[in-house]
Image (cartoon, rainbow, N blue to C red; front, side, top):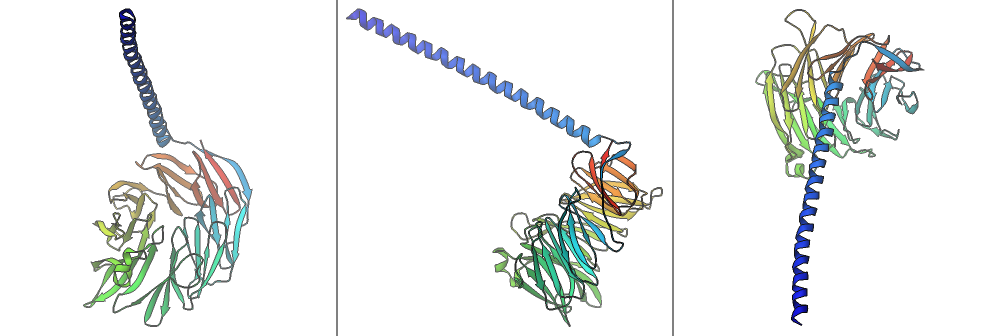
Length: 401
């Protein structure tokens, strides 16, 4: 009996020792696997960074037209970037064509002075001094809105909310319409004496915030007032849903815009201001800088704000100053191109005319400067080193080489 007990005790001891050895082996295997995974991740990350840097700094000496589709462009029509293609509008209608030249949708109308605003997948069209607005989604669904009053301006959000400035004698109304609704969801009454005249109106991407730049008389002079309205639950606790407002003496603010659903900016004749709601849905003035030069042009994306000035230091005619969302000046780039437009991307920007372009990274390094397809009306990036060029007679895919 004692012999059996001894045998069992020895077996248990051997089992415990074996288990400890097995645990150590498993632990060593797990550690080796973790180290290999960590090394592989580091290698892949390093390769990704290297590829990104190479692509960012890649330069081109020319281009090839890898596909071309004939198109008809009426002399009075205007081309705007939209989705993966472009929008064309005129007094007779607006249409969307994709990058392959396919007609995706078309809306006809008769307008004397069409006002068109494109944001995300939505296009808003109204006639200055008319009373009809077309709110069009990416799939071509149209909501026709009768404002009943003469239109002075309009804007749209990335989800189809439309804000329209309407004239009514001594009163100016700002009506806000939800997508699919032909009656105003919000109406804001403004007068020159009380609030000032709305010079510019913009909506956040989610349509919840609205920025209005007013021009208001005060003591024989004029001042700018930039106000923010919140149409969500937060705004219900404020008079007329106005959650914040900022005054700028001896200034005029003709331009406002949202970069996304939280960050907005406004440009005065003498300064740049940036606002952020900081998660509270109450925009605050987080950056302000005075400008000593006259602004010639404004461009923006969800990442950057671009201001164009005449170059006063000689050499090139123009200078582009780029600011990030916090107000940090990322670069000042001079150029001598009599340009049609500027396109700001995530990691590069394009300055182009009807026959030339300059492509730069966000550090100002030139990736390409030279000729493009003749009579170019629109130039926008596609994937990699390919660009979409809309000309007067064709739709071209350019491959930079």
